[in-house]
Image (cartoon, rainbow, N blue to C red; front, side):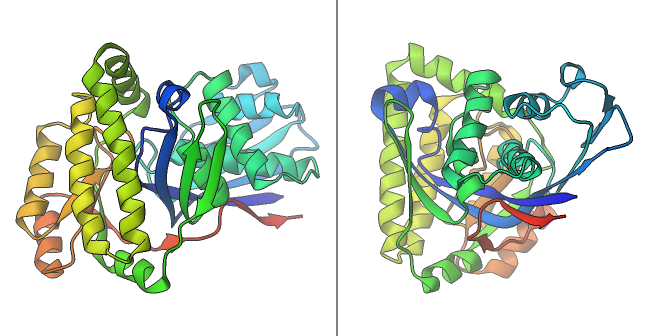
Length: 327
């Protein structure tokens, strides 16, 4: 029995510049952070069976890799050349397709478990890059490299991506006081809307390739990520909240699928009740909303709850994917 635990992430600033269509021309820069919400993968060898049993939101009982419908399980097994009958189960703290990077956390956690099953050591960097290869090169998902690296490394990270796709990861130089202030003033709310990130990201890519102002918008997103880094490392969390608002207003220009009238209504309600800024997690279109609010928090929470949003309390997580149990 092998059990892995892999954190989910919050995109803090510069998100989208990790997409290949952008970094291959202009280089990427972003800030991300993991939280204490996780994907758990359990893996067990089925010595007395010929079929693999896969349990996630569905259940599959298959005799060969080719029969597996779950694309990331299928390609992870193929990537590591594992054909043994296995039982693989996933448990998640939050629903899938809600903007917290659960798909990539799932893949990183699964690869970690499979390496442990093969009795192989895998470095954090290799774990992240293997997940990127499967997502971007094998499955051709229209996503970037933020989620895989965040899940593997954990913590508050700065990522720089060169034009060849090499990711340079470093830790933010941020004080414990600043971290605690962020945790007091950042709020996550679940909209109840799930969506496929690929739809929003594909539209964003199409716009960037056909509209010059979309690339200019991505350049602005990258610069905002740099300014957010400065604000956090200077301990100016209120300035960070203000940059969140600028980030959101800029991001909305990149795709008309980024928001909708209901999300706009929730966002405006948050601002009216004390939030300085916020954004939709991940690609946009649904999932979780994040807001920075440092005053009148009781009234702010009450207003958001009355509008039908469910709050997710969290703390920052500073460990990446790890093997909890290996017997």
